[in-house]
Length: 360
DNA sequence: AACGCGGGGTC
DNA sequence: GACCCAGCGTT
Picture (cartoon, chains in turn cyan, red, brown):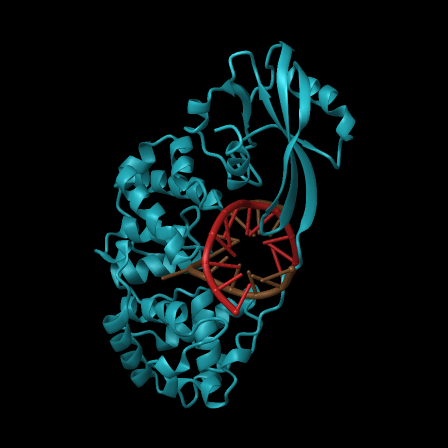
């Protein structure tokens, strides 16, 4: 099944020696991480989902807490989604948490709570794509399967001088094909993790530590002094700015209006304070807008803060305004009045946690 | 194939 | 600011 392009790229590459050098280095130098205590497939799975687009140092405390709260697939399957999101709060890409729980429930019901050990069943689980599937198969079950992430593409693009744009989906398949030809059959776990570990601590994006690299002699880019020119990656377009007025509305008992966001799209099923989009409504219409949306008349105060929050694809410009509920009853079906204590039990995105600091 | 989806560290 | 991180689902 090896294609012509892969054969050509691997011409003259000492696969055996490369495997040995990489695996030896990994066994020697790997970091001690919470998910490396054992090979429990559930732990490997949770860690891999958390690590998607997220640094190791960020993940560590979340992983430890998550494992205390949801130690087994059954525990996670039986939990309330809101509690799972609360444990994910601040980690971002919240659909990862919701998909993980959906998939764990599938494992509990269809696979007797045992994480599948084959490509077909594993890859069919929600949130398990080509990378995560390969990572679980190789790390938890020691099955030779490619796990191509950003690290692997950077490392291999340098070692093999591959100049395809790693931002293109098609490029990942080239690397998968290369890994299938070069992965160690004896220790696929150490091979895959070695590539990722190398990318994380030696073959870094900006200033790779080539003098410390265990596979320096295998590296074509290093030999030509071009390691800093790889990988090739096309740039992403910049974010749109979207302005909102965020309202902190209190009732007579000092409780605040909060609402659960839609179950799809940005920050799905997370909570927030009401936000009026200034692209759709004029700022002086805020009273009518609030009454129309929530059924309550509010006396609004002055602006207490302005802040900018940057996402991967959009920037929120937020103006925070206080208000006091006058009369009417809360009619919005996803909104509630909550105390400060209740507020802290709900999952909020970081943008609204910043706002919450003003009232706590 | 392109886009939407968070948040934070680094340079 | 720009980049990028142990990517995936949807369109």
